[in-house]
Length: 141
Image (cartoon, rainbow, N blue to C red; front, side):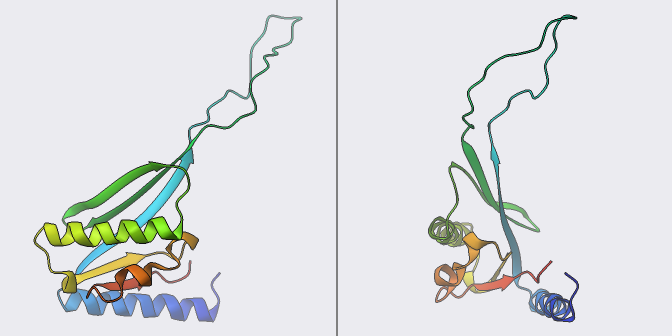
């Protein structure tokens, strides 16, 4: 929604992002998506005079969840897993991301992690606080 409040929050996000870029911070964007492996035709073909009928199980396929982080230098971390992605799993993933960031020879204090406001990202502050990294939330969209 383009309410005045949302416009203000988006402007604040851009101001913060520009400030971090001017400070020379490394910006890393993270996001996740999921999809279901269930695939079934919804239409069939049959000879004239016959019905196209085939009974198939109603069960859906498994969910696959992807979560990744990219920076200007490329992919920082990517993970694929079956099932849903909870706030607890997101926090564990961010902790591993921070470890990987350090293993790549980067300073945690230079990291700005940009995240959306998805429900599974609701408690990322718990994973980031005390590490020296900065968590920046996207403005509402």
